[in-house]
Length: 171
Image (tube, rainbow, N blue to C red; front, side, top):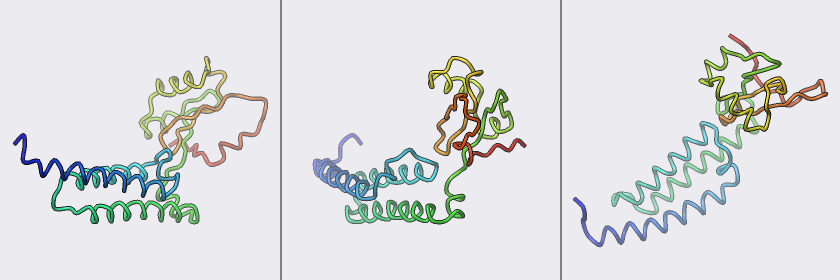
């Protein structure tokens, strides 16, 4: 129960080191996208990679080569989907959510906040973290595709081109 054998400990150490090196290698060659801020799709792949690593380490039934194949498959699929999403609006819309407007020109978008499960206190926290002391200094607050909250301060410019892809539908 507490100890099986030195052979299992030795296997875990050797396979663990090799699997870790292999995972780092595959992640590095897959590009910066794999290590970037994650959307839901990226999070699922990352969790799957972690689960695969744990299985390789702890299951004698899974050979190191099979684990590497699983790493390659997961990272390859992520690369393929990311590649397709850059080239296809349809794929991009399936994989990524759109940024949502939570606050604009003094108005909280309550329906969107409720739908996205964002509280007013979280918006206030994001505004404070942005170094802004008053909501009167804020033009817009956006829930980004990765779950982060962006704060856009008011300015003398009348055009807000950074809001062009933000969904602002209430209801």
